[in-house]
Amino acid sequence: MNQSAQGESPIDRSKLLDLESLAYQIQQDNAKSKLQKTVAILKHYPWAKIAKRGVRTCIAKLNSGKKIGAIAVPNSKPKLKLSDKLNQLAKLISGSFQDHPFHTQTNIESGSFCLLNQSVDLSNPTDWAGMASRAPSHLWRFHFHYHEYLLNANQRNNNQHRDFILEWISHYQPEQTQKSDDAWHPYCISRRIPVWLLLLYLDSGIAENTQNEILNSILQQCLYLQKNLEQDIGGNHLLENLCALAFAHCVIENPGFAIWNEKFQAILTQQMKHQTLDSGEHFELSPAYHCQVIWILLRIAVCVDPSSRLSYTSRNYAESMLNFLAAILHPDGEIPLFGDSGFYEAPSVKTLRAVADLAGFDWPQVQHENRTIGHYTIFESFSDSEHEFSILDHGPVAADELPAHGHCDLTNFELSIGNNRWIVDSGNFNYEDDSMRAYCRSSLAHNVVTISQQNQCDVWSKFRMGYRGNITETRQGSSHNFHWVQTEHNAYQNRQGGRSVRVFAYDGRSTWICIDVVDPNSVGPVIGHLHIGATVQLTPSNNDKFNFDLSDDQFQRKLLFLSAETVDVAHSWYCPAFGIRQTAMTIVYSATRGNLVWVLTNSNSEFSLDTNADMIRISMDKTLIFDWKKN
Image 1 (cartoon, rainbow, N blue to C red):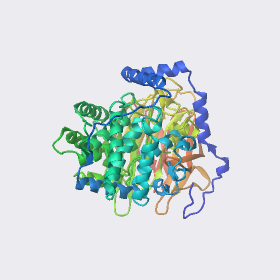
Image 2 (image 1 turned 120 degrees about the horizontal axis):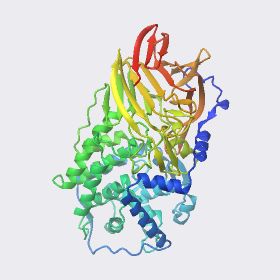
Image 3 (image 1 turned 180 degrees about the vertical axis):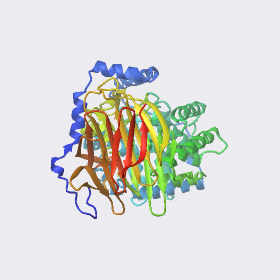
């Protein structure tokens, strides 16, 4: 909990329940056997994808220790196409990366690399051989080989960066590099190729022989990538593969071979059709990866021939995805942190807007009002003095065939007042098989109701998910001055209980109501979680554990629990970006069974609850303001 203008919270954090430890223990207690995990995977994953993955794994084992081998580039004199737009794109991206908190701490001259908020000293010249053993994680090694930190305008020195790339080329010659090395992993190649090409546009003083050496290495990587598309993984990985080839095709002249052809165009078209939902959302259901796919499409749209099929595909889907993105943004202008999302995983919305403008897109205009787009319902009101925003997720936890970036977060929501996030998702800390990964994926890390603190889905390892609950019904309506959305899921139907229903309502005037109804025959207590934003002060109201005062530097609200039997505060984490975790507070409220109801309001009135088998009614100062009929 951060300190606010009103001082430190009186809550004794030393006595708080540790949600990270609890989430990890729950995952360990519910661990499945290898057979059970295999059955779960076979049930949800397409057989074709399982087969491709199996073949790729077998080939990798057979090739263990083998070198990539020489990659002959057809005799040609590749050169960059002259393009004002590509020059503008390179400068725009380089400028936008200068505020990246990790990139700004990377210094090529000293050999210090800060990636994922973790710094490693690799000396100068770079200790290439020692990099793998010093890297704190596999993902860190991947980011090292992306080379995106070289684009940072504040850190870029053409001579140093040129030498760094040439050293990389020399150390990772395909004749000397094992197939299992991250440097030549298809995804690393895909992220690196556009970076090198943009750097060549930025380096106006580069010698012709040096440019040719870099371009020839790029062509080698393109040839390798063409034969190693990640079709077994699919998702954003495969799109990155295709983007790198498309980008190289658009900006390199006379390569001596077809970098892009009808086969790749067909795969891209098919994948975009498959991976884009009707709402325009990317099917992995992570706002961060949604932004990454937009980034892929926009860069192609800038450089491609406007009359080509590639242009039509990239622009058509980019427009749809931009419309979706604009509709879900918080008042601070950034994404919700649903699923595996965090800031700086993908270019910021500000950067996407700038590149969209360069590509000729008009940024979508969104009215500050209640709306539903895809699986999200947004309640929003805006005035000169106040901006209120909440977004409720009533969709699946992930793509059924690719749940790697999904969390146990059915009916999760976030809420902002002004430019501050008051109720937050915990975000994502890392991709390691540890207690933090278990916490961030667990139901305990989200603003949802559980039965006996159990997860809504079976998750294990870094990215695996077996059984998963599903949304079974969503509908909307109004009651008095409130608009509401009702959503039901079956996550606990075959476990501790039956149906679970959430009703989320907003009056457009600073009052939210949340009602959770769980099958009364459920085994175990019904437990809800509300994760309080780091900028918000949380204080018990007059030592009443069923009421809290919430405030930031500008606004104040009251949080009232109308039906809970116990209300406690737990220690948790807020992870706005990879490698960053901030101490946070989570309100844990529970009842033996039945209903959980809370109200967030700026009113000092008295709220009361009346409930029976058929109806839930909420009154303010004895006047009925909301009623909802159970069904």
